[in-house]
Amino acid sequence: MAGGWLAGGGHSMLSNELGMGVDNVQQIRAVLPNGTYITANRCQNQDLFFALRGGGGGTFAVVTEASFLVHPKRAMQFARVSIAGLSEDVIEEFLEIVVANTEKWADEGWGGYILPAAVGGASTVAMGTTLLDLAEARASMQPLIDLANRAVESGTLGNATVITGDYYNILRAIIAREESLVFPSSALAFSTRLVPKDSFLGEENQKQLSSTLHDILTTAQGQHVPASSGLMMYAVTPRLYSRTMPESDQPGGPGASSITPAWRNGLWHVIFTRQFDGTITDPDVVEEIWQTTHDLMNPLRNITPGGGAYQNEADAFEPDPIRSFWGGDNYARLLRIKREVDPTNLLTVWNGVGWDETDEKYGCYPDIKV
Image 1 (spheres, rainbow, N blue to C red):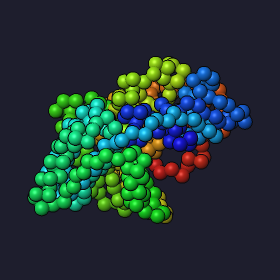
Image 2 (cartoon, one colour):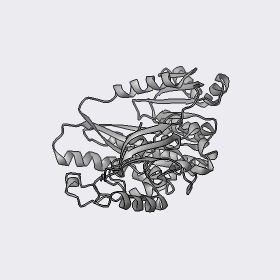
Image 3 (cartoon, rainbow, N blue to C red):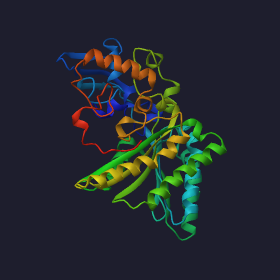
Image 4 (tube, rainbow, N blue to C red):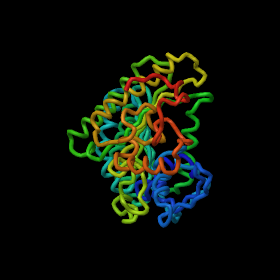
């Protein structure tokens, strides 16, 4: 938790209600490039406290310790829905339902993961909330439950359950499932987008978003590349938390973080991935996988001008990393801090704050057209 998860922002199923990792860290201890050991919090070294919470890993210092706020254990209502997509109509309806209900679900405290599938696969939802009781949670998820029931009635596969559990055990089950989908020696190409709340407001915007996501699925399915594809919508933005965020942590305050404002204004973190054989040595094949992955996200970028991207799970060839990862104001402050604490650029990463793209260490990257 004190590594890249925190440096990039840190999201989870609980982010909607409790905030992101950067919102919950109370103090950081780190070693600067000049060897100085520092303590950063809301009272001292506030610039570094800002930079180390969202400014990106491997850029400002080596973090050795982080202290986090803890929250009392509470019961969580957990919904899991799985629906076989044997026709385009079912997939379209699934996407329309989740898009139309996302803002309401966010206001009810739901957070989690939505995984649509193309024809032949199963679309799933795994979400939880601590703000509803079991009956309220079932009523909230009724549109998806109805879709699953209709799938069963039509002779296809559908399943919907809403139960009371606890976050730790629920998360363990989700992680175990996701880990089973990762093949040994595999590599991943990412392209992602933080989708602003405006994209979920009104029938016209909802239709545009759901049809764009459907197009991504169908286009990916029709492309012949040596990789398996996946589209995921993570409902992990801090919508409810941001409404009551302490004044000290607002922009300009001593506890402000450097994550992009798109996290505060968004409802989804959308991820498109391609998993491929990490032992592939043909550079043309690797380049094609990355290029098609990048291109598939462009339609979503085009309809979300107020969006951004999560640097920890971002397209390595994000077209506008400064605006997408941090925003202009945050980046200006981050660049000033970077030059103060690391004037020789000892710590540098691809697309990081103050990086030098002419550095020879980046010469092996694919030549992707953005």
